[in-house]
Length: 102
Image (tube, rainbow, N blue to C red):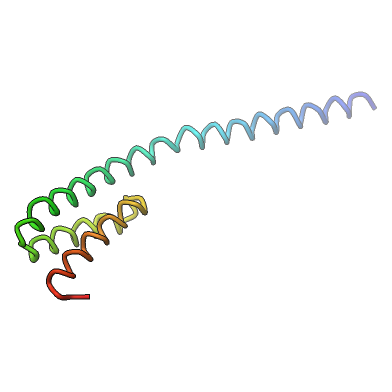
């Protein structure tokens, strides 16, 4: 009887270690994905800032719309956060409102 109890605790012990190993592997892979997304977020945000300060400020709405659409296309591949996509959509809306498109 004692051997079965000892065997049961050994199994639970190994299951805990397996679960801990899986959680640790997931936790280690998470920062890699976040770092990749952060790099694309920064690139797209910089594009939006550049377009708004250059093309939008000088009323070059055609080139502004093209560049912002390209930035949005980059985000559609799942490489940007929702907040970054929202920045692009807001800028596109501002450009469209100046051209008379809604």
